[in-house]
Amino acid sequence: MFDNLQERFGDVLKGLRGQSRLTEDNIKDTLREVRMALLEADVALPVVRGFVDRVREKAVGVEVTKSLTPGQVLIKVVNDELTALMGESNEGLDLNAQPPAVILMAGLQGSGKTTSTGKLARFLRERHKKNVMVVSCDIYRPAAIDQLRTVAGEVQADFFPSTPDQRPLDIARNAIDAARKQFKDVLIVDTAGRLAIDEAMMQEIRDLHAAVAPVETLFVVDAMTGQDAAKTAKAFHDAVPLTGVILTKADGDARGGAALSIRELTGKPIKFLGVGEKTSALEPFHPDRIASRILGMGDVVSLVEEMQEKVDRDQAEKLAKKIKKGKGFDLSDFRDQLQQMNKLGGMAGLMDKLPGMGELPDHVKGQVNDKEVTKLIAIVDSMTPMERQHPQIIKGSRRKRIASGSGTQVQDVNKLLKQFTQMQKMMKKMKGGGMAKMMRQMQGRMPPGFGGMGGGPGGLPPGGGFPM
Image 1: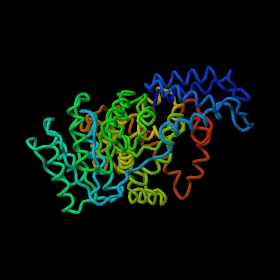
Image 2: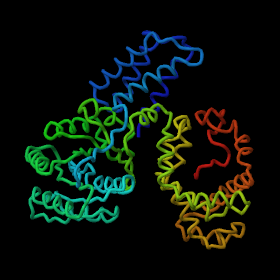
Image 3: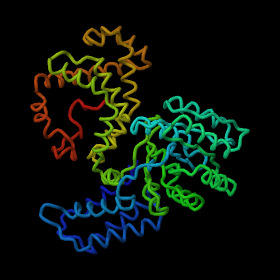
Image 4: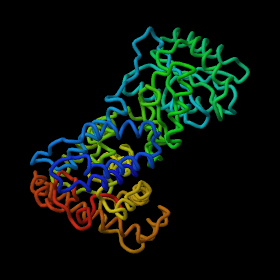
């Protein structure tokens, strides 16, 4: 997400190098480029105008200290304004109510309401230890009820059954009664969507809202619709009082116009981002961290939180002990690390949160993709336990068999074994506390943005460190 803005903002801010202070003249062209970058990202025009005016007002006349460049000063101003535009800080769900706390999901058809209902149920169960029930009031879309039943099973939430011949109001009231009797903490009500906003739809959502008295009314909208997402959210908010927004398919949106427009146009915060198809792919929306991503500074805080939440600590500790004792790092360990990476959103998800990734050449970014990771896992899965422990025995005929079993080519197997050998050498250097020495040797081999560690011609250290 925000790939286009990252690239444009990076180019814009380079133009201020060598200036001693920010003046009306030297930031005029810069702000024109910022304005164009935001418009190309499909940010609503009134939002762009207000944003640029506020940046100009705060930036003009600011002295640049010896330790900062004008570009860095402007980045600080732009970062602060982007954060303010999106709502300053994360606004979580307010579930302080007599159980069951009801969450009403609203939105157009195809926006991802049902999937988001499941993701939210999983988030509340895993992160907040809530006992969650879900119910579908969508009696119009074929198989909508069955879809939610399936999703509920995947996320281990209780599903309250309903049928297309029932009235949505009756379904909702019966679900509340059942949730109360079963001592559920939260009831999430999935409502019907339409292809476009119409009066019948709005009246139904008003009636449901009045009947269930939700503590949260969340509008689910597709990020890829850009500023139209903000306009649709505003139309819904005029009908029922929204408390927040879930922005879905954010991983497929390279522009980011919806995220930058919604708060300004509706006055309501984005509470979550949907960042993939998996039921775990729901992130709390942190404006300060998103602003940091847009400006190419990454989002290390979110990455650390995800690692604490999703990485198997026991497995990681076993590997650390194994390496420290000098016991071989084998292909089974290599596969385990790839699988852990997938839990963190794959290579794309990791790169999106690492600082300085915008500086990598396009050909390097293009090589880093999750299909490659999946392919590597398939190749290791096609090996015998003996081959994983002793890769040196994998010669011609074995390589052909492994390639055939994993649906890949022999050269793919060769490439994996070469990468693994390089990784194995690196792991040997870590034996007995050699990590610090290895890090010193890596100085100067990392691209700009990696903690200021110099910069090499290829962008990445030899061997990559990334599965490519």
